[in-house]
Length: 146
Image (cartoon, rainbow, N blue to C red; front, top):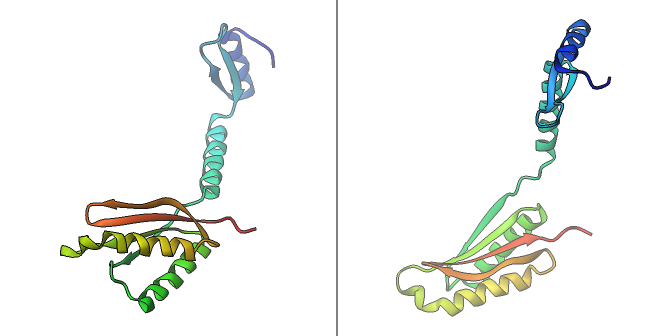
């Protein structure tokens, strides 16, 4: 096309049956383009929808332990955690301290570190065990499949 003064560009766009769209209004002279504006908006929405579909949605699954969780329950929850990590979900493992069980903070931390060690091949620790109120929380994210 070429650089036309705005009025001349407007008449050319009208003759072609197109809309005149201002691309860069700050430039001297302003940059304009003759195009079908409705089609442009449609294409833009289509591109945004495709980008949104490609964006990965992060799923966070939770597993709750008590400070005195026995081995059978631990193994059962560990199997669930393995399944979650294999499916590509992040894992939030936490130990919930009820009442006076807060005195077993060290047991809770040992439990979470044991879980992290057992799931080492499937997930990496994103956040080490941290006590927040009555909960000790640890985050694991899945490792990329090789």
